[in-house]
Image (cartoon, rainbow, N blue to C red):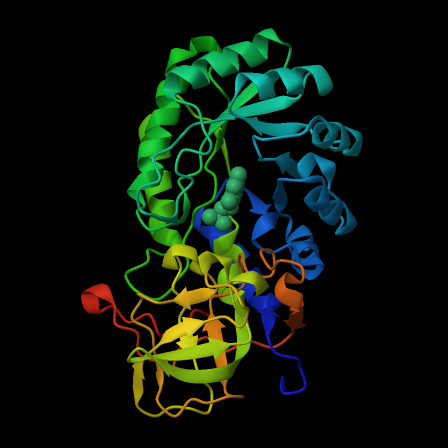
Length: 388
Ligand SMILES: Cc1ncc(COP(=O)(O)O)c(C=O)c1O
């Protein structure tokens, strides 16, 4: 079915995206879902989510254009990047976007100047412990700063409507949402009659990768529902969320090919035709360790260093992670990365080292997602079972 497709490529199962979206809708009733376009901006994904009634979280004019082309309503677009150029804000305004996230005085002033009356939400610096890819201080205001920013926004004529956070992507601790909702409620309490009426629960909902227990959407949703219920007597905001990874990761299989196997200093190096610059950016620091599968090669496995094809020394996917591949693997054999629908094609750099960016082939039949290679895991939990 895919032998005629050039390697490497990403296969994306649209039905799995639909399933993930509907699963999250069910888990978080009453929560508006704004798909974080950066996770996978493929036009078919956006069109599907428009048809499902999703809203969208944007970070750039490019993402804005993609959403509009896919038929998204401007009222369902939310500009979630707190770092904006004046040209971004003008383009957003021209397109009819009215909801923006902010976290600094200069950005509040920019919005007040360029989009008077816009709806703004302040992003808190939520703790991102438990996240595989934390923001590590890049975004977010303290509680004191958030109170001041919302007051500043209101004084400047903006609709200071929201408070929110992002608990870090691939967040494996549901309690991260609990703590962030509690912090948001403290900010709301301090604002009295001007308490924000919207709560942005951000993204961060995890998917299953190798190496450890991953809570499912229901576990995160339960923590969110409990925290909201605890505060409901004093504060009952309209919640929305910005899931990216959880809606598309399990829908994608990245299919690559072995280029070379070599022994170096006592270790077996497997070089693939895909690496850090064709979409596997999240292997940096070995943050995300994908589940792997080698169709047609099911024999005894042994440890490998897994590397990309370019001449860059950093283009090594896994040196420390305990990655094992069949001993009889050789050039031309296929290696599949499971759970690769998020943050792969969108990260693929254009043409680094003369290698083309990662193409996507949308499928209309399901892709099996079970792994055939044992990856040692904490707690002995079996993550090799099918996701959908
Ligand atoms: C503002 C914002 N919202 C949502 C997301 C999506 O996060 P995730 O893919 O972890 O759900 C991101 C990811 O970086 C983000 O920056």
